[in-house]
Image 1 (cartoon, chains in turn red, brown):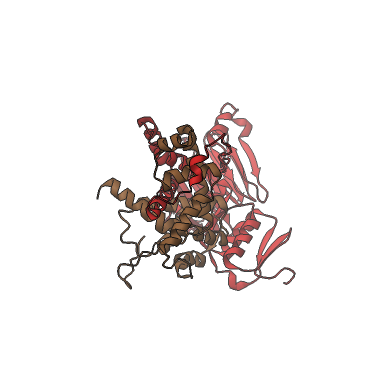
Image 2 (spheres, rainbow over the protein chains, first blue to last red):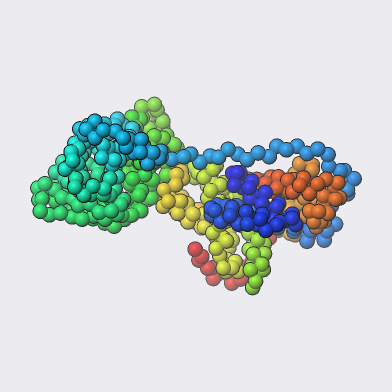
Length: 326
Length: 193
């Protein structure tokens, strides 16, 4: 039982006590409406309370044990304690880290590289007060000047929240691909033959240096694959953009992704690589949300859901074959 | 129908037709690998969706309705990027048809149901049990219960909350046998979402 369920019981007891006043009723409404889970837990608790009235209906009120009338209550144990809050706080506050840097000299960070190892996620404030979140196994080179803000995505993936400055375009290069923003938020993931661009706020412009005249505008909620040959495949899919950026909170979210896609995703973050030994499992459609660094959790859930055998070793996880085989 | 009447109808429906199947739903979610605190979230959201119904008369098969709603809640949680342990789509659809599994709730005699409800009260710790017997079996008010037991109303209220939490815990772990409400028109099942 969660602490929400205990609070729901407390409110039922209070509201059926015959002692509710206007202030308590108002406090109840605030709690009730604060979260759909509160409303649900309260309905459930109240329904159980009303269900118990059936004992009265069914016994016509004469089913009571008489001993109770002669056994007064003595001191009551008071052991009911709410469970500790379980929700972890996700993501540090971006604003705080940016503000902490506000006073830092411009030139100090004008030319810098940031690199992450496998499984690492870094959030770095840049000299112009923009913010970069750098995903697993990635590297960015930053070159800042009063007229230009150039970011070179050497490998991997990064998301940028760009501080507004119309005089200094903010340009990310990933191989032949360029993405330009003035004040906005977007991510770029480098691939061998192009780059994924996801826009979370504002508008960006993207192109390939092979055809600099052919620029494509993308707005918030758009995701695009920009090929080196300058072909751009764009789709307005805000849910998908959010899903693909769950790594900023160290999460992997699956909405009907295949097992092979999910495994590729986990393998970006962990030395403990997952291997699918049985090809017939590769197309299994999955839904769920996980921590990027918990591949064992994921594998166990796959086992619970599909009953595929899973063998977990320190260096790798094999899905689809018994331990020892393969 | 007045608001008070429809709330009463909803409470009666939830208490007798939904709560008794909650333990099976939780068991199913456990089997799919959903962790305890995630199960609580999902179950609470399911009840919240029941609140949004205009009425419950159209629900022919409450058990199927419960499982179907749980499936939709899980999908909605994933859409909001909540961490909910995995299920295959196939298993989510199993949730949908879980009502086809054999389950014990066939027509149950009123006596069995009575024993079960009384059993919930009987299993409470001694002082809780006294409070619940006076309030629920004899229908006494909180003030009358306090007077009868010679304690303050605050104590009765605390015992009430404590006992209700314990009863909900029991209900979440073991299914209750209830009388099934006959489908209004056999063969003509509504699909509700």
